[in-house]
Each structure stands twice: as C-alpha cells, then as structure tokens.
Image (cartoon, rainbow, N blue to C red; front, side, top):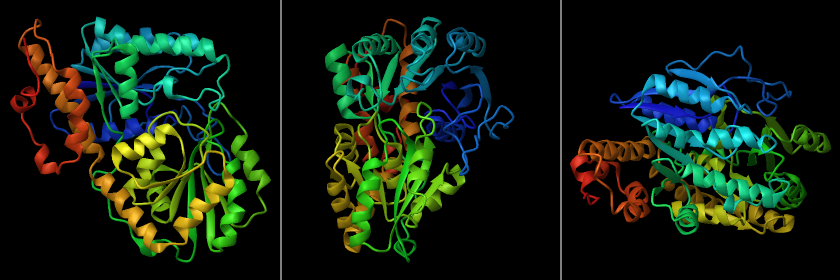
Length: 444
C-alpha cells in the first residue's frame, strides 16, 4: 500500500510534528507499506528553542534518517494546495493521510492560506485518491476567548465552512467521542471515525517508583505556552504546595506558542530567584523519557483545550499521575480512555494547590493513579493505533475492488464502536484478515 502522510514533520517544530513522526515510525515498520511524507518547508520557529532561547529548527538541519520526506508546502503560503496536489498527482498513492489541526497550514492571521490548505483533502479526492483526515480538534469545542481569537463570529463562520470542506474527504477520524457526536449531529456526517490519540511507545515500560520523590517530588508542566496553556495559576498555587510538601520541585518544560513570543521568558524572569522552580525550556525528543520517569505528577494548568492532550498521553506512557483543569475536552478524554486524573476548578489556584498536594502527600494514591494510567497506555500503543487505520484503508481497498457501485451502509454504526473496543482487547485478539473485517459492513 502506497501512503502519503501530509503534515508538519521533524525537524520542523510546528504543531503535530511529533505526532506525525510517531505515526510514520509505526508505518515504516510495516513491510506492506510504502510511505512518503509530504512535509512543511523548514524555517526558524520561535517556539522551538533551546534553554537559552535560541531557535532550533533551521533550513540547514538534516532530515531524519530512514524516512522519505518531500518538503513540498510552506506555512502561511497560498501556493500550498497547488504544490501539494502536484506532488500527489506525481506520486499516485493509494491513500493520502492528512494529520491536521485547523492551523496546520497557516495561522489565524492568514485565513486564506489556512482555508486553502484545508481544501486539499477534498481536492485530492477529486483527483481520484482515497483521502483520510485525522482531525485533532474541532472548533465547536474551542474556547476562542481563551485561545486569544479575535472576531469570534467571523471566525466561527469560517471554521464552519472549513469543517464542511474537510468532511468532503473520504473519511475523517477524531480523537474524542464528543467530537464525533458534534460532527454527526451538526453536519450529518456519515464518514466520521472515532479514533484514539495513542501513546508513542511501541511497548511502554512500567514506572520505576524509586526515581520519584527521591529526594524531590517533581511536578512537571510541559507544553507550548502563552495561549490557552498558561502558567499564572500554577505559579500562584505552587507556594501553597511547598508549604504542605517541602520537597516539591516545579519543572516547567517547553517554550512559547508561536503566536505568543516572549511569554515563557516573562514567566521565567518573574520567578528567576525561586530555587524550587526549574525552567527547562525546549526538551529534545531523546530527553523526554527521563523527564517523565523522574516526575511524580504532571500538571496541565490550562484555561481551555483544543482536543485530546499530548502531554496527558505521555503521562500515561510513563505511568505518571495527572492533575488537570476541569475542562470538558479533558473530562471526555479521561472517560474515553480510562485515565486517572484529578480535576481542579479552572483558574482556581487554591483548588489546584489542594489537588497537587493531595496526590503528592499520598504514595499509595500516586501508585494507584500511575498503575491506571500505565494500563491505559498499554491498550493504546502507537503501533496498534496505526494498525487500526491500516485495517480501515485495507477495507476500503477491498470494497473498491468489488466495484465502484458498492456502498458501505453500516459505516456510521461501525465507526462508533470500531477502534475503541478493539483497543480494549489484547493484541492477540486484534489479528483479522480482510474477509473478517469486511464482515462488519453490508455491501449492496
């Protein structure tokens, strides 16, 4: 099967580049898949910086070994659709798989390039390609005020149009059950799958509790900061946590969101004299495992959310308890994937301090939450997530071989139940051939 994966890809530092890397890593291990990555051109990004604030991603960086990457589109440019479609036409893939958020191709300050890029899945389908979109958020569930969006009414109208265009792809997968319900109810979509974000490890390692609380209880906050991911509430709560847990240490990792240059540095400057707060800045991929393994708890001090959380899934991968703002998307994620999370009232520093202290003061609670999160991770490894996608693509290929007049009648019912139930079963129970998968649908 020839697959083109479209999206940001390392060493680019743009949104979802790490997720695309792990999808591609799982795909290239399949001997039946021939993978080409259609990625963004490299440039300097303010939010991909080292601990001293120096940009990491530059045009001189080499491509990651082992991947076939064609950098054929440019962020914030109207030429993106033509360049992508010309490349797709030349490659003639069996599947074009888009890994997207609404700002993948451009920022909100450049609405025309953003909308034009989101039209590519529909245009590629018109060329005769099978197109699939993994959509990491939908804007009906985004708090625009919290995300710093201006002119909300106009933006929601544009996002409605963009969503309808994206649904012109052959199939779309979302990562939260609430997102699927919205697309089914508001847009009457019949091609929406419910997927799972997954964890990046192929075989997660059980947490080593000797690395935690020895001698410090590390509280980890990681992300691209400045929009809906903000640090003010956490900074206000931490002194109270220190009073109750004197060996606590707060580790702030990550850097600025690309729309908020200078935010991370302003927080660092304001707290530069506080010895129990460590500002790590950008953390390279190879340093992520130690960062999580040595942490007693992961905190997500968000004002709002824009989809399933990457840091939450990393916390599961390494078996780390979590404390999160009480936001509907995060509640849905925890329920869908059986994560152990303590929720605090959004924006309430005192409640955040209470929830953090409650976990840090109880080794037993830490172990119970860690075990539950690690158990969730084992059920949703990235190879298994990708295997589910490949099963669907194979089903479509089989259906096509039966004739263009065939239609899938029970797609909607199947898509509601398909991957989540499969992810809950042991891996040995997931091996199915094309005939057994095809038995899920009715062809006429």
